[in-house]
Image 1 (cartoon, rainbow, N blue to C red):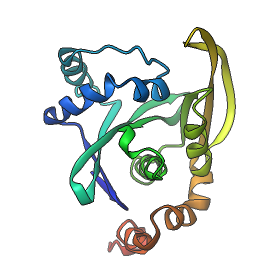
Image 2 (cartoon, rainbow, N blue to C red):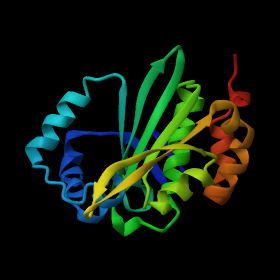
Image 3 (cartoon, rainbow, N blue to C red):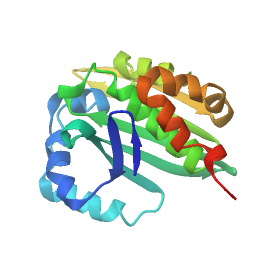
Image 4 (spheres, helix red, strand yellow):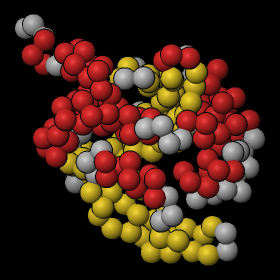
Length: 204
């Protein structure tokens, strides 16, 4: 579990699956997060997926909880990869659309970077998003990701083909701007967070 600013990221539990089922069938959520607005998933599909994924140590699934209301507001995942001895996390997330445009997506992305680089010691993180999801692209770039390329015409939505955009960030790039990002994104709670998640506070 990680608590940062207004949110908590904790592991999926079976009690969360009704919310996941609702989001997976939400036209707008799937339009932007997956490029699949016509997404039809049964509750049984969600349960089956949960049961398979929780056995996979290379998939870290999180529920995003809004602390002040103790409300589930979305999901996030880190997919661990180790290609050519470079430890990589492929990040994914989506929010309940009630919470769009509030800056929460940036804090969720920050939380995933903290987990990836401060707790898991990964070398790099990557993320992708469909061409028209400009909001997601801005979130990634505001969190220090760089645009690295695209898969041309690899998504099909509303009768036309779209590119998928890809972004990444290296550990050293993140660490160079970590404190600045944390202060910018979680404001007055940054000092307490940085003190709590700090090597200088550990006693050998």
